[in-house]
Amino acid sequence: MNWNPDYMQKMQWNGEIKNREDKERVAREIASKVKDGEVIGFGSGSTSLLAAYAIAERVREEGLKITAIPTSQEMEITCVNLGVQTATLLEARPDWCFDGADEVDPHGWLIKGRGGAMFREKLVMAASPVRYILIDDSKKVETLGEKFAIPVECQYESVQYVRERLFALGAQSVEMRLAKAKDGPVITEHGHFILDARFTNVQENLEQDLIRIVGVVETGLFIGFDPIVICS
Image 1 (cartoon, rainbow, N blue to C red):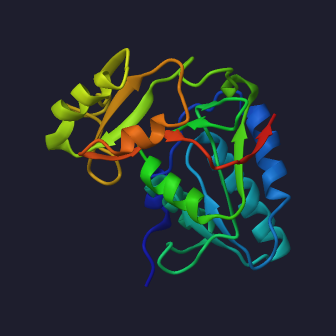
Image 2 (image 1 turned 60 degrees about the vertical axis):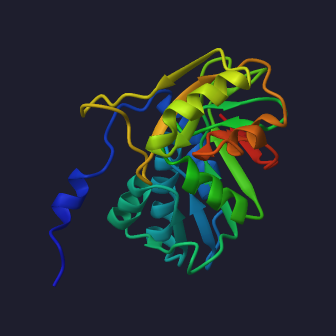
Image 3 (image 1 turned 90 degrees about the vertical axis):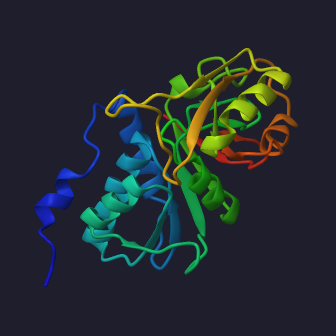
């Protein structure tokens, strides 16, 4: 017996996708790299969503057998709807992964996590020997923090202490991320709060300084992953 597939279709993300044509070109490029039998980390966000569509099309048309390791509940639901087999990192290791980014600087350093899935995103990226970052031109910056704050995922009881330590590390502002469709703060996929910390002049040691703060679970600062950036 199967569940009603119509309900799962309604659970998919269906918001407006900015720069869709550019993102679809990038999605087709990453889909062209897929080989039969591969295990692939599927990232989160609008560009990754379009990449999942493009990959699923190849799976259907060419009879490819692949396994996706989704980095978010949203992407897991998408894979189920598209008929793409999924696994967790407990079951398999990715041959490679793809993901989007909110900012990418000339070093390949990233800010991610506006979707609240940075823990799984970073875990899958760390486990993958080859990493692709899919962006449109608007995501390129000269210095991280030009457009977006750094998301800091923290345990809820620690928010006052973490906020204090973020300022001590040089944050210009620290704001609790509030939800738009519910009362109160955004809750990450692992049940934590997000503090958005504005930093200028991001240095290489900042990611480790942030993660050493007691109460911080993960951050949206991705440094040292040496990704292959595919830009439309």
